[in-house]
Length: 193
Ligand code: CO
Image (cartoon, rainbow, N blue to C red; front, side):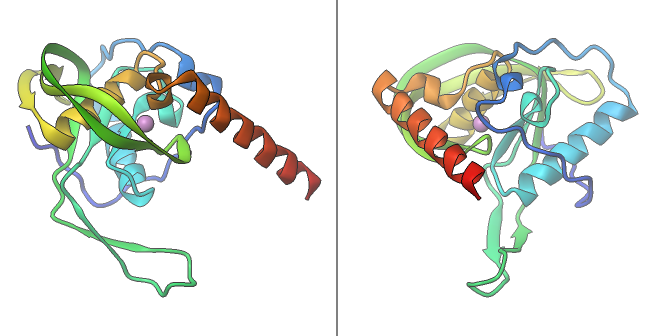
C-alpha cells in the first residue's frame, strides 16, 4: 500500500555505526496515533533529504518496529558541482511498514548495498529474491505485500535493522575488520584537528 508523504517534515539525526542503538532489538508498535504519523512523515523527510531509499526507526534513535522506504523516486542534483548538493525529487512512491514480518522467501540474489548509518561502505550482499511481507499501516490495519528486486532487498535490509543487524554483518569477517580499521584511522585523524 502506497503511503502519503506531505513533502514536509523535520530532518532527524541519523545515528551512525558503531552507535550502540543500531545493535538494539526493536519492540512492536502498539499505539497508532498522530504521533506515529508525524514520526513517519519525519522519517520519510529525513530519508529523502539524506538521500536514501530506506530508513529504519533505530537509525533515528527509536527502537520500534517501523521502516520507511522508496525505491522508485527520481533525484536530480540542482546545485553546481562545487556546492553542497541539493536535490529535486520526483515520482515518489513512499512506503511505510509498521511491525513488518517476512512470511515467505524464495530464491537468492546478490546486490550491492549501502546504508545511511555506514556512509561510504558499499558491499555485495546475498538476499532472498522474492519475499512476502505482512505489516500494518498507520491505522493499524494489516496488509500483505509480495516484493521482488530492489523493493525486496530494501525491505530485508531495513527489517534487519529492527533486530540489530547491519548489512556488513552479512559480509566476510575480513572485510568487516578492514572497515573497522578504516573507521578508527578516520577518528584519530579527526581528533588531531
Ligand atoms: Co541501513
